[in-house]
Image 1 (cartoon, rainbow, N blue to C red):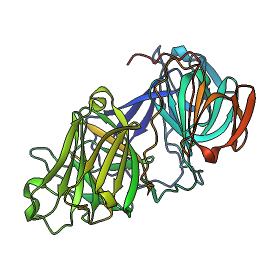
Image 2: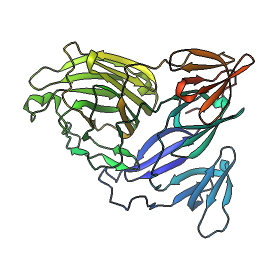
Image 3: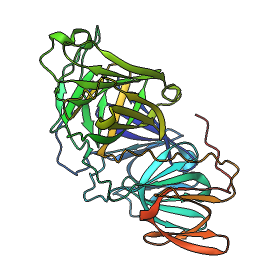
Image 4: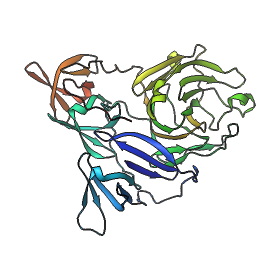
Length: 417
C-alpha cells in the first residue's frame, strides 16, 4: 500500500500489476476539514515512511517501487540506498511533494486492463513496452499486454482553465443541510477535500460550447452537486430558492451513488428536472473521471463517466445558464476528493468509443478524420507512429491520430478488490 498524507486524513492506494489501482479516503476522526496552515511553496515538509509487515517503521525517501521486485529506500544518514523485498512491505506513507513547474500539457490517455486510465506524453513504443512521460511518476514503462487503448488530445484543444492550484480565487460558502454540521473544502496537493457539507465556487469563464473534465474519489456515499453556468458563488437552498439573494439561472448536475440528474434552477420559477438515470458505476467504484459537455446552440448538457456517455439532456425551454461559473456542493455524506479540473472549448463532436474486439489479433488505429486502419503498431518516433499493414510500414503523425487500440496479446488479469 502507498498512502499520501493529507491534512484531513490519508489517501490509501493499493498497487495493481502495473501501478496505482484504486484510492479510498480514510479520515482521521479527530480532525476536521479546516484550512491547512500556510507553507512555503514547493518545500516538502514531511518525510516518507516505510511500514514493513514485521511492524518495523523506517523514515526516509522512496526511490522506487516494483512489485514483484524490490523497494528502494533512501535515508540521509546512510550513504547507499537500502533495498527491501516488496513482498515484505506493508505500506508506504508519502510525505509532501514539491509542486512541479513548467509541466507540459498531457496529450495521451492510456486505458489499462483493470479500467484505470493514465495521462501523460508519449515517448516511445517498442516490442514489449510503451514509455509514457507523466507528471506524477516521471517515465513509466507499460507492458503492451497491460493496456487496451491510447487516446490522443491535440494541441488545438488548449485548456481555458486548469486546477485547482490553491484556494485563492475560490469563494467558500456555508452549507447547513438538516442536522449535518457544515464544513469547508480543504486544498492540498492539487485537490480539494471535504469531510462535511461544504461549498466552494469560482467564475472560470465557461464558453458556449464547453468540455469540462474532473476526477472525484469518495468514501461512503457519493452526493455531489455541481452548479454549471452560475453567476452566484454561494450555495442555493433549492427548497427556499425564492427567498435567496438574487441569482441568475444555472444548471445543477447532481451525482449520487445511485443516479445522476440535471435540474434547471431559476428564481421565481419552478425547478425543472431534465431527467434522471441510474449509474451503477458509482455503486461499484470509489472513483470516477467525469466529463461534462455543453452546447448552448442546441440547449444540451451531456455527461460521460470514465469515457462512456451516460446521458444527454436537452432543455426544451432554451439554455438557462446565465453565468460562467462553477460551484461544488458536497452534501456531507462520506468523504470526497475533487481534482484535475480542466475546461476547454468543445468542437461539438463525441469521440468514437473503443471498439469491442476482445478476440482481435491486430491493432486498430483511428484517424481524426474517422478512417480506421487494421494492422500492427511496430514502433514510434518522436512525433509519429510506425504502423504496419500487410508488409508495408506507414508512418502516421500523432496529429492525425485519434485512438490506438491494441489487440492480439494476452491480458494481465486485474486483481480482486
